[in-house]
Each structure stands twice: as structure tokens, then as C-alpha cells.
Figure 1 (cartoon, helix red, strand yellow):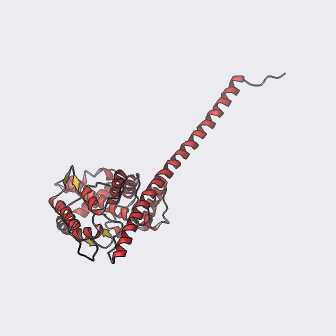
Figure 2 (cartoon, helix red, strand yellow):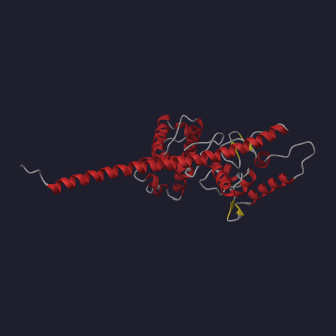
Figure 3 (cartoon, helix red, strand yellow):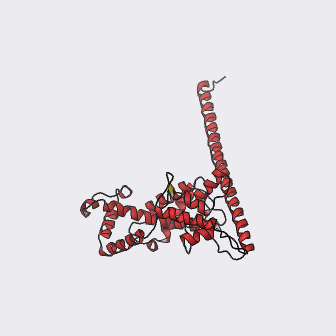
Length: 304
């Protein structure tokens, strides 16, 4: 797995499987008693990285890879804890919940009982109410599933044979069965289209796709709505800077596509090499079996 410069996320046919593997390793390794990400010791993070390196070809000297993997660990850590809480809430009786752990914690009664005690504590109840209120303020969800927006953007560009901008990507990731996931999502997309169609005053540059999305969706540090966690669009400065930015963006998109194709080809070569080595070992073993069988059929040598 590699990350193209500026992408901040792996873009390859195996990206979803990679993220899923991180989730499996985190659930298996991280102690349940770590209630916050800051409670997770560095040694557990390194164990997960070691497990991943046995499954994928990874270079953790690459800072972009390190950032992505640790961010994905954090995301999975939070999702796992949320899944456990949802399972707990299925039971009206806390004691019944204690007797029925989720599949991921079957055989780990002590860990599950610890979480059950945590869920009924006053501190957790108060925090849960605060989090619920914050979630209700979110205008809409996306329809991208486990794929990152960048992965979807790459796949759409591959399928169409041309780059896909953030406005089009927003539509693709917020439509399900031909319909927007919510009225708020449709309104946001219509607002983007309206900004795109507005005439540009003489002597000024039209708004870029990034500026349109930032204006409609807003921004926060380290996160671009419509792109998820990853590359951060730069603010427009001058006409030449805007033109240069567009050119750089197209070059970066091409580089990402080439990196993904190269990585896929290298993985195919690696698989073929492993298959060749396995076949060679089988041939040698068969030769030895034939030699042994031939000697057995000839019997012991006769004295003259």
C-alpha cells in the first residue's frame, strides 16, 4: 500500500480491505478499558502496525502512511466503542445486557462487564446526552459506505476517463438509488450549482470548485467537507495562482492515478513471484518423490 503525494489516503483497489484490516487488528489488540484514545499506549499501536505489515507491504517511514494508519486506528477505536454501546442499548435490563456480550467480546466477559458498568455510570450518561445533541445538529449523512471520498473520486475518474471535481463528488456521495439522502443534502448541492452558474464580474476570477464547496459546506482545520479527512484545499490568491492551482490539481490527480496503477501492477508481480516460488518448490518435491519411488522399485543393489 502506498499514498500518493498530497492525497493523505491510500487510493488503490485494496484500500477498503486495508481499512477493514486496520479495524480487525484494533478490535483484537486495543484494551477495552481504554476509554479514550489518549489512554491507548504506544505499544498497542506498534503491535497493530506490525500485524498490518504481515498482511500488506507498508512503509511506515512514510509520514503520510503513518498519519493515515493512526487516524484510521482512532476512527475504528471510536466506532468499535459505539458499536458496543448500541449492542448494550438493545436490552432494557442492564443485567440481561451483561449476560449477552456482542460477538466481538464473546469469551471476554470481564471486558464486557467493565463496559456495562461504564455505560450505566452517571458520567457516561451525561456525555452520551451531550453527544446525541451534537449529532442531531448534523444536516445529513453520506452514502459512500466504507469507501473514503477520495477513493470514490478516484474510481469515478477511472470509470469516466476524466477528473471528478468536489461538486460532482458531493452529489455522488450523497445520493442513494438516484435520490439525495436528505433535503438538506439536495439543497446544498443546488446551492453549489447556483454558485457555479453565476456570472463572473469583469476583471475577477470565477470561484474554484474548492471555494464553492467551502462556501456552502464550511471548513474546519484538517478536514474538508465533501472530501473527508485528507487533502486541504488552498485559498485562492491571484488569477495566476488560481490557474497554477488548477494545473497542479490536475497533475496531482494524474500522479495519484499513475501511483495507484503502478502499485496494482507491483502487487500482481509480487503475487506471481510467490506463485512461481511455490510451484518451483512443488516441482522439486515431486522430483524427490519420483527418485525415491524409482530407488524403491529397483530394490537394494545386488552383490556380483
